[in-house]
Image 1 (tube, helix red, strand yellow):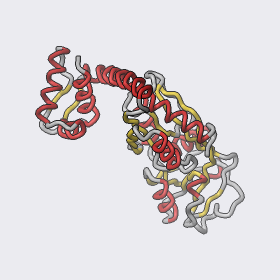
Image 2 (image 1 turned 30 degrees about the horizontal axis):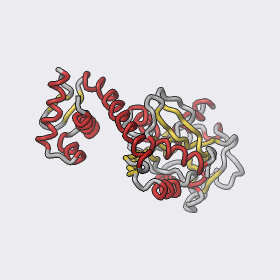
Image 3 (image 1 turned 120 degrees about the horizontal axis):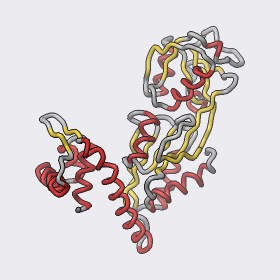
Image 4 (image 1 turned 180 degrees about the horizontal axis):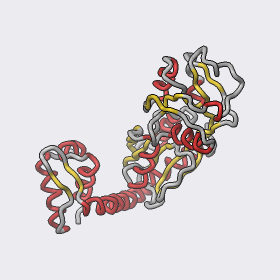
Length: 297
């Protein structure tokens, strides 16, 4: 079984399209199709259900995908070990990042890593489905590491290391009855209307747990996957919002009120426990923990 064919299979599975996968692996589509069909013939199974409009994994393909990723990762780790010995780190590092993580100086981390490891290509992937999706992509092998906020949730095959914590503040429109208060309790927010991040996002994890623990109901008028937009919708009067303190400092368009007791938002580094990290991945993890002191910059 050729590693090249495994890589082609993984590319098609992740892209959901032979056309996009062909661009990704720098092949013409016909050559990629031949490669995947050759793998299917070698295995004696169909890995994809093909239609005019899309490509879907078969049940066998879904079982085979994590094994293919693990095999490719092991081969890459072996190559990394040799390259690290004879000429410095090489390879590609896939990093998942959240929409907003000002409590961790990501730019400085990436700049220093690039300076120290110029042979490593960094590929950043924003959170398409929030921290929940990023964590699952680390577990599945789609990402090497990710910065996530999952409010104490545990994921099989994923290790989380805390990097930074900060309080969430209640965002209210200027002139709102709660504006100017020294602090607000969760019970005081019973039946209030909120603008929230979608399910799976870091601030939503914290809010859902806090309101459930306090047995307090809240209505959600709008879900948006961007904290700056949450602030703007709060300003427009569509509801209240919960915003990390580092983001709140950047806006004077709404009022921010502390919560009592505070709600804590945490950023963590997620790595896989199912696969040995590549040399580049381990170097990146070490650098992140060194620069944050495992407690924030």
